[in-house]
Image (cartoon, rainbow, N blue to C red):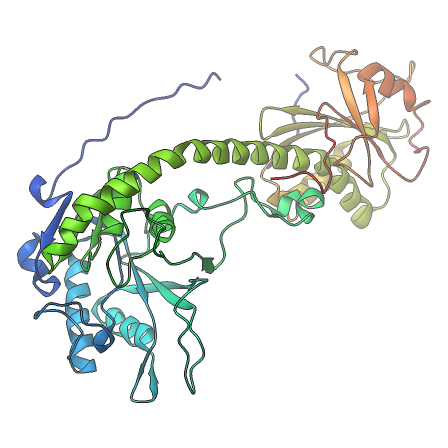
Length: 462
């Protein structure tokens, strides 16, 4: 955004207490139910109330979970898919229009042939109304060292992300990070979100291993990693929302949802898994989330610091780019220097100190508007006010509004480097350093003065 203004809010925070309109009886929520997921329509009323479903279906006939009524084991493959289609079709009906479904699945080797189970399942779910939005690779890092002829050791699985409607909940800022950035963020701050970089489609999260839960090791075939579940919960829900796992197993999804102040519904056939969840898994994850709260607080502080720096880097670079683009399209403007003043987080006042040969700034303003309204400057996310200033015809001095004090301390930047100041000055000293205002620069580098003081190097750690 950009505007030309004449030279010269309080924010109040409203706390809203959420009231949940319960479409299901309270005993249904925050409960691990013993039952068959194929009969979910009998276990749970049909009104939409679920915000996210996170689950890992049984691995067909590869694993026996020890229940006569289990889905998958000893079933023909197509019957297995039929059951899953029925289950996730029923879940679609109890999911809000803003809700989503996340399924962790893998390919299966059977009778010497690779079966593309995740993709077969995706097609079945599309048939009942789910929309596939993304496929994430979960790099498990370490796994059992099994390999055989025609199949290498597998260290990844697929995470399928579906939504019910087009306007699904998706809070990407919850997963953005300001760590391990390339040094380019310093010179190109407009290319980096102030909230940090978005995660990629490959998530490297080690599988839980013996000892990782201390004495509370989960005795279940495929416990999902806490961090994997945590990411999905934060990405797709807010506090008070409902998470469902129709194949709850050890209850990692339920426990992590509860630890993040979400409500949950779990379903599984085996009572021993529910006891494990209640006695070991939930207490362990809640303690872990509580112990991590301090480090998470540090991460949030670091993210705020990074965001502030990105906005300041954008501001110091903006005038340089504005002049550079003007030169590209219209030739070198008769300008002695630039004074920029940062106001708040995203507002910038830019004073262009023009040469005495300018009789009118009307054409200059029109051209600048065109440049500011299109990329790359339109992508900076700043509210920029431009003030082209002409010197007094008699005194040859610039007249600034009274709000700009002559003793205001400024940092100096060249047009070659706007992330490291070259020195300190004041408004008065800066104007004096420009010498006689005749519209010609003393060198090829445009001199920029700013009330933003930066000394950022590639060694800066975030």
